[in-house]
Length: 172
Image (cartoon, rainbow, N blue to C red; front, side, top):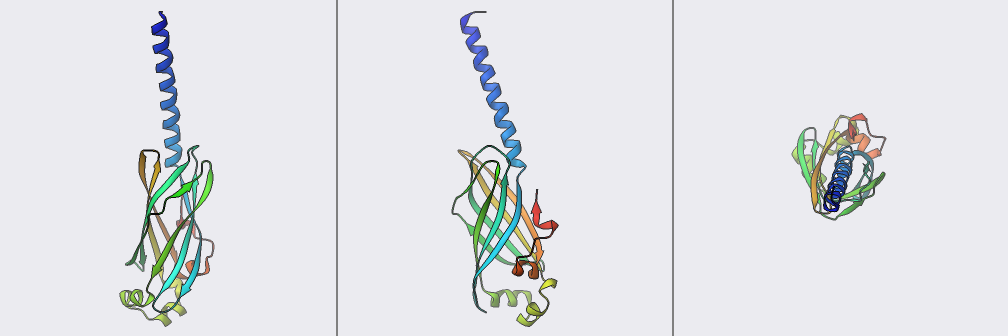
């Protein structure tokens, strides 16, 4: 073997090892886990609600990721009530759980009109109101970008009391 052939073989070996490592990291990225952390109610009136939603994002890879954007579609009793977007990038650390947040603002009055329910009905039986939040997050690593989709299902009582989410409130 000539010196040139040896260098080519070493170069191909290094590229193969690098691509294998990158493939395994990508597989670990796809093996993410998202769960509800908590909801913090910041303001409440009949015409305006302001709250922050916090979720745990487990990154099993060795890569620092960035959540580039988030979009949430909120349904109550299978009726669409709100779309929430967040374009503030958030860091997701490697091999750890990062808390990802989103600001939620809506009008309870409009929600009640959409649901055709009264505030008294919601207050007296919040456990009967099904809540579904469909999340779509755009994740990035350098020039690579991909989407992560997640559905969070609970009821209004659990959501407002920030109780431990039920089993369907987790994607792992």
